[in-house]
Image (cartoon, rainbow, N blue to C red):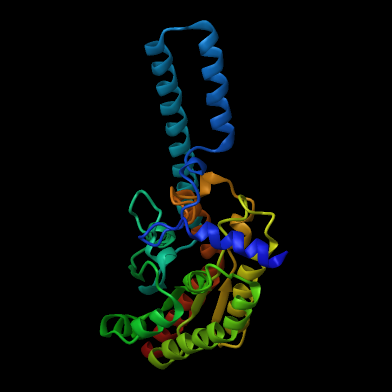
Length: 320
């Protein structure tokens, strides 16, 4: 049964777009189910009252525009709520934040091109500045696996940024799962993922070691992985188990580190509808990224306060 379920998962991945985005079906993207059903009802009612094709087309177009406007407004409200949440945080010290990782760090799927959760986070923190400055450098790269991120940490520009960082945000692991699926497309089993877990854990530990070699005390926040297919393939429990295994590795590795925190996001998308995903039905849209930013903000706020306390203590010591 497990093998059949995972073979079905393999077939799903055959629908991947060449760019690396995961595509289930364009019919699954777009408006939330409730709004789609509302439009269907309106069109049926209209067909009874009006047989003019041009009139029907205008009504349908108008309904779609209203729904899209409402949907966009909902997304902007979600983003605004995250930004407004930082009003009680008063950042008084200059701070350098470095974000490293895959497409979630890059912000793929954010139609506004504002950088996904990292961009929303930057807007939030800059709104809470006093006379200080917040700098966030984004080194997210679509498709990066753990081995590729490990190599990129040796690049002079990234290495230099890590050395000067006061906080590091990291996303990694989803593309390691992708690699296993691609390599075992015709005979996908849970064992293929189980066999790779140790290798992934070793690479993740090396990523932490490499960051520590460049900046021994910087706080590192590892953002977890989510299962984007849960709402469409909830009958395949192995999907959640695989994602859960990868998150367990992330949680265990951070627990073994000093000054490191794991940020779970799997629960955010477990029951999320299409309104949280971009057109590729894998990456979050701006609303989905706003939810991630909100979660990340909750976790890093104590770290920001600790950084400010340490900075004030250092300045006081220097003035004595």
